[in-house]
Length: 210
Image: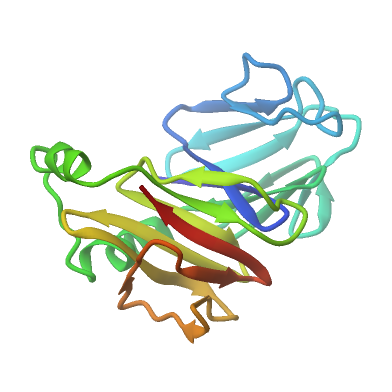
């Protein structure tokens, strides 16, 4: 299923699955993808699905819509395309989503059934990733989902997976390998412990768990 990964200053802030034929994007709260920033128009752009194809159309926005650095009016999106609106970058993931899920969940053995997952959540204390450098310093990303992606799409993205015994981080994509306590991260994944320091795309973060 195609999805959009929204990030700002290299920090992923939300993921939105494209489940409808028409998905709106803009500053107003009634949009399907809400980006609360003055550089974003109230009704900025729309994503339209036609079969397996996804088209992005700019709705005469004030500051324009860009795909891979080029201003567009209407364009079909390809997997890996980066949409830029203001300071926000939105990565489009389509066919790669299947392999992405296998990389972050299945290959690491993190196959958790729907019935077992709540029990795993109960056995683990709340955890979060705290940004400690860069313009987003001080921001915390709560690890509330089974899989949470962090990083800068196209540069370095890692996935933190919640398992019954704890949290595991693994590399998803990127040209620069993320590090944990200075050690390069691989797709195999390693266990996270309270206080561990992660670095992705030049941004330092800390894993905190209660």
